[in-house]
Image (cartoon, rainbow, N blue to C red; front, side, top):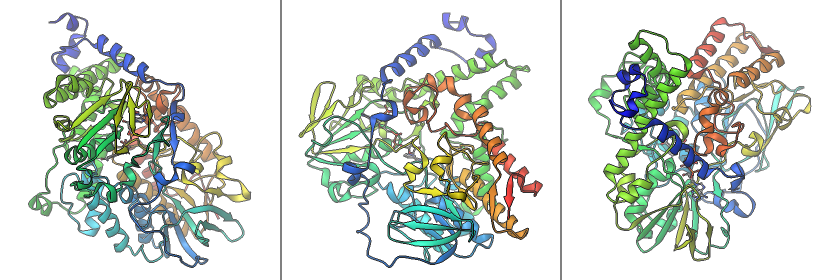
Length: 617
Ligand code: NDP
């Protein structure tokens, strides 16, 4: 037994195996890495892609919208956002008999995230058989275990075609206002194309990560080279396509800012094509094994009806800390959740034949986390040939501090002689000059700088979506949510009849966003069809039900439960860039009971059939 192991409870050693590291030293190192990155401007460090920077948000994939006559008709449902949330909502509303459904999106087609994110190598690292909605209904077999972006975009189009959603859709159109008329029992939907039409129901499926953000680097306007954000990839400049082959970069010095989940996927292609690539890193990602493979058609043919929901639920339960006899997806996601969350603690208690105290549980999970992250760090060391570069690619924080990444070519890219990792010791780029970028006091000459710097998180809903919602008695959603979101079950809002949210607000979170949305949409489709069955057309959350749900989220929300955890994390959008209290982080308005409990709660509510908390008229 090592000196370190002597300090660890023998029960834990029996569970975790050898502990060949000093947990206290790791903990101290993590805090040092966090402290290096804390900054007083927090989320204020980023630039919005508005005003002088709005060209970073414009659509490079479609021509300017052709003139069209404004629409002034009436539909049964208006669905704002034509990504998977909006598409699934529309498809389910169709199924419960809702007639005319109008999708509205600023993009020129459906797809949402997958319309915009066409960068080379873009893919979804959640298993396609669980992530892509409606596979059984549409009889579609994904090509791979993890789908690439063009296939996912095409699947969005497949859904729109199958459910007749193109006919009434308005693309390249931004909603500017939703206004409820109590007299008519309808919403008036206004847009930037002069439309003003009526809808009995509105579904707001605007998506959580839609607005690109830029780093607020000094001199950003002075750079004379080419710049764009990964979610608006300029293939006109780079050449090639989502599968790579970026011939336009063969004689270019290219910089990438950011090393998050997006950069992990596009850097291998940039490394393969650019004459010279500089990856400017502030904090390394945790990059584990991907293991993608083609779908086996024999296995596919053997799947029994109902398989997709069963498989997706199996995955959801496992990545929510629950138990399943079999792990159907069996990948990096289910591995880390099995080893590092409540499931691991429950399994430990079972094996030890005793309950674990809260402290013991926390200690066990912390040790398991150090072990896991040691494996991730060892992977960097094993793949990257230059030990100094490998060292700077090692993430020094707990696994769930940042979004876990999985990729089999990213780390290897740093073995290319034409690729340089410019680690900035947590500081980021210092400034841009007309000729390039300055980091660690050195100027790097660049032809092109690509921002893989993510999306707006944590700002007010109405600011992010770009329209105001005026409910009953003229009350605005901005006013109603001035102190934070207020919903009943994350789906309905008091004072805003017949308006529904499909979002991450005040619902449970899960790694597979489409599954989470599917369960929300089942619920909203039920509410509408049940109201119709009872002879009502207008439904609205009651004030008391909403207040109780807001209190539930306030007391038992995920951010509050994990407050200490996030305080010790390196900054990022998960923890409001490290700001104390985590009021605006990605999980700040998330139901704390987890996905299994949330879905059970909604199911029980539906089975009860009384529509408790919803006023009908
Ligand atoms: P992220 O917000 O995750 O990452 C932004 C990156 O930019 C970070 O590495 C950040 O560093 C860096 N950065 C920001 N400012 C600076 C600066 N001034 N100097 C240097 N670096 C800077 O954005 P992504 O687009 O990578 O991912 C967003 C989300 O999209 C993911 O978290 C995920 O949820 C989703 N996604 C999902 C995929 C999937 O396969 N399902 C694939 C891709 C994205 P730091 O960490 O220090 O803040």
